[in-house]
Length: 126
Image 1 (cartoon, rainbow, N blue to C red):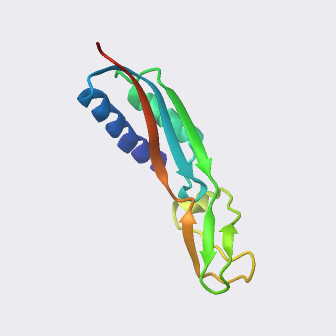
Image 2 (cartoon, rainbow, N blue to C red):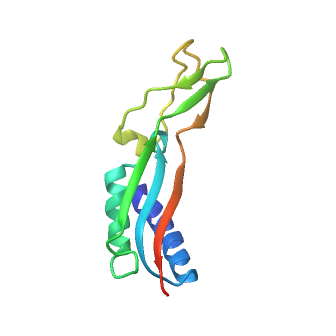
């Protein structure tokens, strides 16, 4: 359910920027989420559309791109991808991943946990 709070934070930024720039409306919102954030893109999109109702962002196209994880193993030096899958348990506790090369659990996540508002396209009032 952390999609609702994440969507609220994103909507707050979009609507604040819309107000500060005196935009007539928001045309497109681009968000990038890492697979290891365990955010569900469809749910995030649903909540954003809900929060944008009756605002200048109503009807904006919401584009969500997912980022594959990149990790570094502190034991063997492996740098690369790691497999993840959605599990409802991950909403209650974080999974423990291991290095695909040596099996060690000493991994540093270099990419794949982010949630970034990449772009907001607006129509500015003239």
